[in-house]
Every structure is written in C-alpha cells, then in structure tokens.
Amino acid sequence: MNRRRVLAALGGLGMTVGGGYVALNGLGPGLGFGFGTDDVAVTVDTIDAPGSEAGQQRLPVPGRPTLVDLFATWCVPCEAQMRSLRAVHDDFGGRVAFVSVTNERVGGGLTLDDVREWWIDHDGDWTVGHDPESRLMSELGAGGLPFLALADDSGEIVWTHRGVASVETLRAELEAVV
Image 1 (cartoon, rainbow, N blue to C red):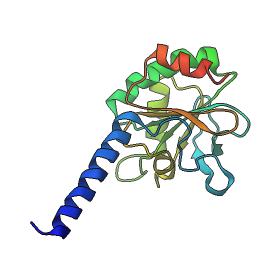
Image 2 (cartoon, rainbow, N blue to C red; image 1 turned 180 degrees about the vertical axis):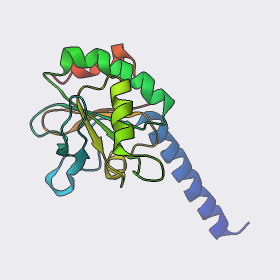
Image 3 (cartoon, rainbow, N blue to C red; image 1 turned 90 degrees about the vertical axis):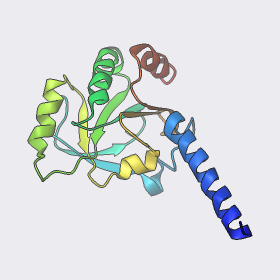
C-alpha cells in the first residue's frame, strides 16, 4: 500500500466517523452553520393550512424562540413526531414559534394540496413551510427525518434532535428557552 492510499483511507475514515456522529447526535448546541444570522438567514414559503398562512417565514422567527420541525409526508416516524409536537404546542405555542417544513418537491404526483391534507390529517395547527431546495435542511446539517432544531430568542441553535423526540424531552428543551 502506498502513502497516498493510506492518506486517502485515513481521510475517508475521518469523514465517515465525523459524519456518522453528526447523523446520530445532531450538530450540538450553538452549531447551526450560521442559521439565523443576517448573512445566511433562511426564508421558506409557507402553505395555507390550519394554523398557517400562505406567504413566507424567516427562520428562526426574529426575537422569538423557534422550534423547527423537518418532516415529509412519506415519513412514518414524522407522524409520531407530530403527535409529540401537538402535545407540547398546546402549552408552548404562545411562547415559542413552531414551524414545520417539508423539503418534498411538488410535481410527479405530489401537490401542495397533498401536503395540506397530510397536515390536516395529523392535526397540524402552526406554520407549515415548503423548502424544495432543502436549504434549511442543509443549513441545519440534518441527516434524516424527522429532525428538530430549537433556537433561542437570539437565533442561536441550542438543541437539535434526529428521530422522534418524546413529549418529555420536548417539554424540557422548550422550558429551557422560555
């Protein structure tokens, strides 16, 4: 084995271990690749649905703690996540902005009406957005769905979670920012 192959193998191993850590554990507090700063603020289109109006939403919501939920209509664990979000939204919705965002592309069988119908079927009652270019997912370093990111009122990401978060975990994290 020559030196180049050894260096390439070590570099690949480092990327695999580091990427695996992020995929399993999220970015960690304070890491959001500039999410929420003026130079890389993310704005998503919003959908007319229960609790949501068609338009645009800057994320995180300026001056307000914001819980971002990345989901997809085909994602079975996202359905379980919606149940947990619904449970805590009743207690925190007045103090924390809840925004759920799908990166699904409209066309080829999926319409915004399909997203709206999924939203209604799963009792969504807060802002729902659409980000087909996956800019938000990229900014947050989300490696899968569902994915949650919580920003404090200054826009700093203080918690991320990949997979379904329990009601208890969500309550504890939301309490910490209100």
